[in-house]
Image (cartoon, rainbow, N blue to C red; front, top):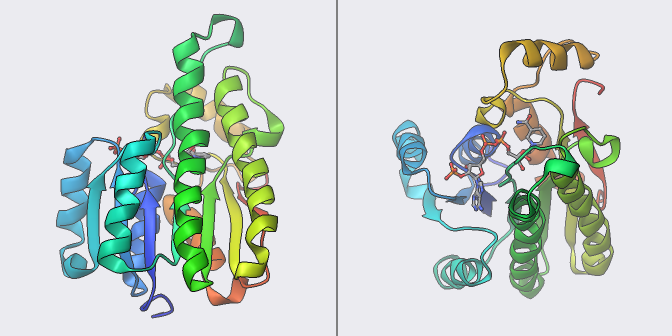
Length: 246
Ligand code: NDP
């Protein structure tokens, strides 16, 4: 279980939901982690309190992944403090749902900025560090709506489809540098992400899932750790769905 004990992992959206489960799993398997969050300091404090036993192996930093300068400063810090970066999980994501005809420019742009531009900015910096050491694992958290579409989520679906296209292209670019780039695509997962939806809608969504239940953050984390590990060395440019057969 100590597979990651010489590894440094950077995880965005690390202190809540799916990212929190991924971070916890990496800590349990020996990794050093840098966890990024947008601004919810209460959630960050709770993460720190709950993971006290690993306190010497994690650092939490506030950083907007959509901001080029903040991301550059984050990577300067990682380069100076840790010298290398082995694993990047682009998990930070938002939704701002609306039917396209009613969707404001900001609803469109905010989602594209965080979900897609954030993935580009983080992956670009990570690849520069990873190429120096000829090792890397990049895992982008996308969604089945990338290929299925979803009414009210044109912005979100476009951002998630963009992540898949970015993943497949980057995988080819860095394949000879011993860097793999993959997506994990969670279906409906119980997190704050869906906390604005009412019970009737949640029940409707559950009926859409062939397994008739939502997934857990831990089930997504297991897929991420698989792709980050040694057994996935020949897997790159793929999308691993964790969706109960959606
Ligand atoms: P949550 O809303 O529970 O958590 C989102 C996390 O992302 C928070 O830690 C938040 O920080 C962080 N974040 C948001 N915007 C930024 C930003 N600009 N810069 C840095 N960090 C940011 O989401 P989930 O855990 O449910 O979702 C995680 C990922 O999984 C997302 O990419 C989402 O699209 C994807 N996904 C989720 C599904 C689900 O059903 N839950 C289904 C399919 C995909 P803070 O705490 O500071 O706000």
